[in-house]
Image 1 (tube, rainbow over the protein chains, first blue to last red):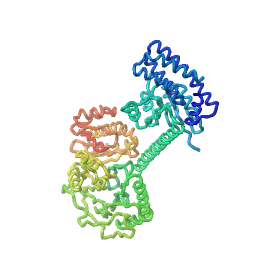
Image 2 (image 1 turned 180 degrees about the horizontal axis):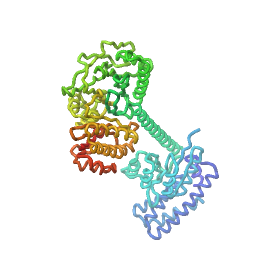
Image 3 (image 1 turned 120 degrees about the vertical axis):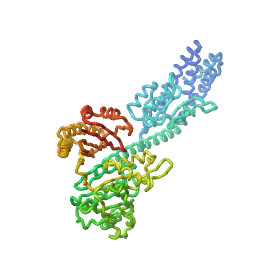
Image 4 (image 1 turned 90 degrees about the vertical axis):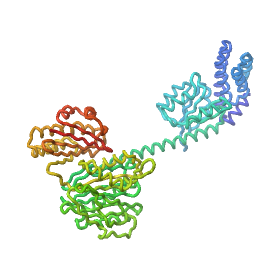
Amino acid sequence: MLNKIKQYMAANLGISDDETVKMLIDSFNESCDRHLESLQRAIRSSDWNSVRVDAHTIKGCAANIGADEIFAASRALENAVKEQNTQTCPALLEQLTALCRNLK
Amino acid sequence: MAHLYKILAIDDEKFNLTLLEACLKDQNYFIRGFTEPLSAVGELKKNNFDVILLDVMLGPVNGFDIRKIIREINPKIPIIFLTSLVDDINSSLLTKISDDQYSYYMNKAFDHNELIRRIEQVGSSYRKLIEADDFYRQIENDLNLAGEVQSIMLPRWCFQDSSLIGSFLYIPKFRVSGDVFEYFRLTDDKFFVLLGDISGHGVQAALCMSAIKSFMKMLISESTIDELAPHTVLNRMNRFFIDELAGEHYMTVLIGIFDTQNNKFTFQSAGHPMFLCYSPAAKEIKDINPWKKGGMPVGWRFNFEYVKDDNVEYAFNDDDIFMGYTDGLLELCKNNDDAVDNELFARLFSEIALEDSFFSLPYKLMNFLSQIGYERANDDTTLAVFRKNKIADTVAIEIISLDMEQISKSIVSLYDFALEHTGNEALSTKIELLLSEFLNNIVFHGYKNRKNTHAVAAVQLEVINNLIKLTVFDRGQPYKISEYATLEDCNEQLTANGRGLAIIQSIAETIQRKHYSGLNETVFYVK
């Protein structure tokens, strides 16, 4: 996934120097960690609006850097809330967390 | 080197701002990112930016709420909405974005080149817009100044010379005007009168008007009266137009010598509407050019010769009133495009001239035309009246520059006149007091907030048996009182404009104040 993101950044964002790429990946990871934590709390307390907002934010960040798998997983979580399939949320969050961890 | 674009980015997710900064890390871009929308608004108040990149979902507020606040600060700065929101089937998101003329959509999963292309496109359009706004503002300021300068070059709106009195109304269609009205004293009883209309309007026409005025001043200063015969002057003017003004403009003009010693007006019209002459004795308008003599407009043909045979010599009576106008008057339209015709104008003039307020004639005429719906001007408009300065023994006229010294001088002179004609010292003192209060407080303050280097008022004093009728004409701040306003209404209005009302009220038997197209006419009767 990391290589795919690097390729996307070079081709679509004009960013190819290692330092900037590393800085962006770190920043992306920090952002994901923050929102994943928030998602866990929100799911535990059934705060579905917060789930939707956090999932949407991760989706936007992932779309920006071509992290397709993370984009798809966060979109699935966002849609689950929109479509009121909230019982699937814990499993979807687990999937999303694993993908984010993969990137580190 | 390309211009540096200043970008303000607002996104509640720090990573997105970091990414934008990395993408635009280029010498042509300066980017300030904010996760707090209100801090971004504060920055926008302090500094100029070319483009705003704005997220739609910003936590507690949304991007559209922020846009509203931004528009209060800057109505035209381009806002690119960067969003990963998926639009619905009715394109609600796009519709909402395009509700604002300067808002644009871009998907958050943008391509670097596409983002740069979009920023430069909207940023450069915005800069051109700002440049155009600045340019127009500059033109607007220049035009205002040109209008002020031009008004300084005009004669005062009312004038009284050795043997000529008159007043005129001048309305530029667009700040400055190509109309020219001027009189030059040749001797105590001979005046050179000129009323012209340069083709077109606006700045070009106004510059030509200034050139013509300078030319005429020079011509008159270096010529004898015999050399100023109308046809001779028209030939000189024609050459001036062709040689000096590159033959691109022409002018309709009526010029003549107004001779108050022999009561003769010798004139020639170069394509200009004929002056009207109203005879109060006969209560009718006389045709001053029944032979329809005259030449073509000045500047039309370089080889055209204005001839002596086309000069008209008109013999007038002491109290005849001449009115000249430019054809802007005949182009005044109603909303249905009906224009003023000569016949209607002449009829109105003869009706209004019956009244005894000579100085307000042009203003009354314009006011009546506007009351019957002729308001839409298509050209510059000038209306001028003049006549021999021979008034009845019981009437005194003072044209007063509105500064303290001039006011005092004129009041003393009117006091002397009243005393001489009534022998009544108390009455004369009342006149002195009333005028002092009215002119110093009301007219002076009325002019205070108006840029008018021609702050001048005309005062007409008329002795009628043991009564004095005082009429003051001024162009100070208009406070409208309808023709049917009660005396109390008039007094109330006057109170608001000066502290001298108590004195004025205690002195005057009646006060009437009317407003006609920029002119105030106040009539007092004092016993």
